[in-house]
Amino acid sequence: IFKKRWLYQLIAPIYGWFFNGQYKRYDRVVSDMKESLDITKFSTAIDIGCGTGAMCAVLHDHGLNVTGVDNSRAMINVAKKKTKDRDITFVEHDLLSGIPFQDKRFDIAITSYVAHGLSIEERKKLYQEMCRLATKWVIIHDYNDERAFYTSTVEWFEGGNYFTFIKDPKLEIEQHIQELKTCFEEVQVVQVDIRANWYICKPKS
Image (cartoon, rainbow, N blue to C red; front, side, top):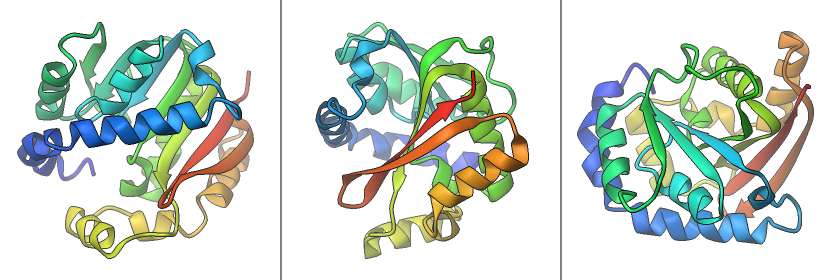
């Protein structure tokens, strides 16, 4: 994903066309998850790999103080336009190079459809960084193994690591916990859509 930054610069306006649809899906998930994990009771959240800002907008509208980070300036520009009536902070920064916030700065660290596009080593860095930033929960919103043909085609074109990721992301995260000895106390997997899960991780205090 990071080697193809030019691709995301190019397609950011196209992603912007899907903002409203993404917003509706994310809003439904956050609302449906309130009985299991009501993130709206927390105050601050960081959305890592925020893209065009749909998840940021949902979290903001549910009452959180939100910061969105993405390594694509074009994505950040679209996000700012799409959420111009909301008080959301957007930061352009390489997601794996030490996001410029102090440890445990946020209650929630969330990422949506980012992990699957990374190599295994890059995902380790992502998990570690999210654990560093969050005090309460790390939420990885990503695919499960019920992929559509269209999704497979797009992921092949983007050149990510989707097909490895979906084999067993819960097991992979748990293995990374043991390897890194720094991250999560527990991992829960909740199906939130026909083709998506929340991988809910409790950071070590």
